[in-house]
Image (cartoon, rainbow, N blue to C red):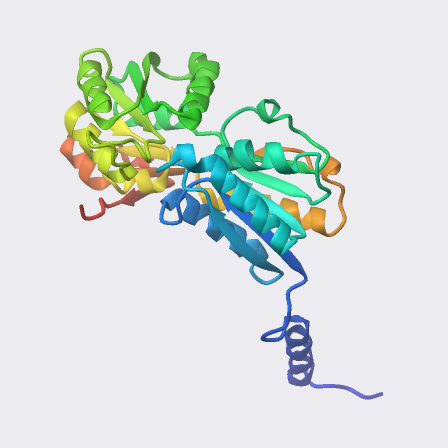
Length: 334
């Protein structure tokens, strides 16, 4: 009988694995169109893209369209029409639509039950029924903030917390989050003292000053694109820093990049989970699984984050047991 040495067997296995990888320049089996609601530099969109590419970079040619609705909401419908032109030109095997605006302006009017191409959404805050989902060719992952868990974490850090206020932007995303808060409020470990929506930075700052006397902490949510006095849309980090200074009490958020701007803490959701989940669902559909057998899901993962500078500024000295599993982060340079 012929016997191979362990080294020879290992070499054969390595060569077999290499042969299974796509050769450089070899065409990938799938084309995937990704339509992003917002702008390319937005941290949330970068996280979603990282998640998508972690699953599809080796098996699909990816093409991105950014609708920029945080900075120019009124231009969204035209950007959706441009995405449709790209869809017809690119002829993708599958589509991923990120966040509500891409779903509302592109998927619902142009793709839902109109084409056979499988479509997976991610980052959707509204209820799927608002868009007529599930549909024959559409499924995906909803985005739900970890409000309850974040407030419970803050309560561990500040046991005196009894009144929690919320502030978000007055747009479809902000209004969807307020619906989630109202649905869950009875289960929060603090009374919801106010839910406020702002249309401008000046209005957000006025609300923050007003809430100082009626709440113990403020939860700020999804403020990207809120305009300043001149109408210029602002990055979320500018807004959060201004609101934090104005409010003067603990301010918490819901994403890691929020906490790195200087907010106190969060049990953070992340875009990587959204993008990777949608990509895996789409891959199943492109491989032949009917979309009707790929149910709509929601995000589950959360990461406890605590900003060191903010913690010290409020004189918070948590018991070590509360920090188990918590990532300590530093404030990014302004």
